[in-house]
Length: 279
Image (cartoon, rainbow, N blue to C red):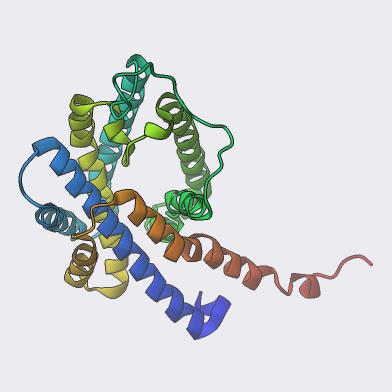
């Protein structure tokens, strides 16, 4: 970015990178807090569980290289996938989602084409942006690969699997729940499945928080400050979906789309002048 937008671009995108991952880490800490509340039914407030998540995530983030923490990431992703598939299957065998009314006949009220308000539509788009806003981390992964030439195939495989999972599981859950999808969706299948699924996803969310603290820490060398700045603003916020939309709208587009566009323009803006056509 220093080449594409000079020092101004480097400084602005570096600040955005650190702030973005601080926000994402905060969202993950809030997700861990939600999971602990669901599993334990403890009287502890959200702020206490966010503090616990910050300590655990910050502790694992102190591991020096991505290679040494890969085992935790693989374990977390495995637990996360198993929990999501379990919720999807549970919704398929139940007669109705947990939040649907019990005293009337149930019929899914999903819509192929909805009629949302402007705020609802923008919030949904921002959530999609957040879901695909992991691209800022790809540079760090490529830098630590034994063979960087394998980065392209790994990137393509990752995006294909993620897209299939998003579309497939999202469509199945929405078709069974309709407007009664919980936020997060793990709570849609009832109290028992909610506890079990949250118990599994906690490990995946911890791994995500670990990576979101670890990556900007390498740039700033201020791990404690990152942990505190991630946990402090979001500990009193109980709404996970709104926070995800906010992060996606504020920094997701800049870090995922605008940055790569600027780099492409830098590489190709004067390409025609350097390589004139036959005419």
